[in-house]
Image 1 (cartoon, rainbow, N blue to C red):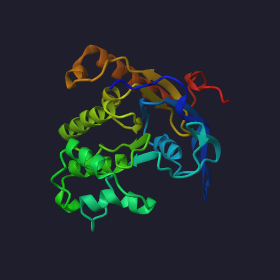
Image 2: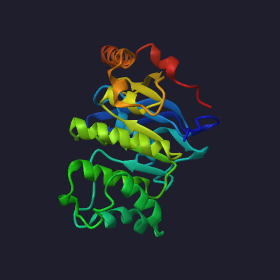
Image 3: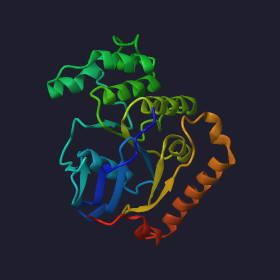
Image 4: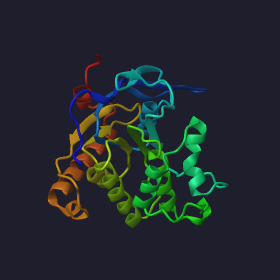
Length: 273
């Protein structure tokens, strides 16, 4: 299924600034970050460690309030957690005393709604967990737990899925498998995805655009279009075109570390409206 990336932004971040108050003074994590994300788009956020990527992502989810600025979903302010926004964290965060089925049902218990078992069963089949519903987290591998977390996040059909470095702890083979799985699910759904990753190769494989952030205070330093057609095969990752784009982004991240406020920042920021 071809994704619809036309029309108004699905998710719009305007001049997002987040400052943390500490005993030694205010710490500005992100500073005047602006970004428009179209419906059905996959956008990855990369940058040096500590640049505020997670703060930026969590502000989109409504889990972190902003010091100033705003986040809009379909034109409406995001002021807290929303059923329209799913989240996959760095760890699977499955409740150890619940089996897989009970973990997936947990969000519905909180929302007081009935799960769509046909949809959930189709997701479990897609990720290869359809025979593991009675298993507990301790009985699942790390990759299986992250698959379960992905199913849980998609189970209530959010229109936006935010992913905070969800595959960083997995081995290389399992990580590649998860990347292909995410793309397959995305191709069959209208979900908009924003992904934080430390792997530029992962960002290139999955994304329509890649956002590079500057060191703290994090700003949007540049945005790269990813020109490769979908579906993307693992073989494409060994091409010269991918190698060149990877090096451009790597060198840019190094450059942002050497200059706290690169000239590109102002050019990359959309004007506030």
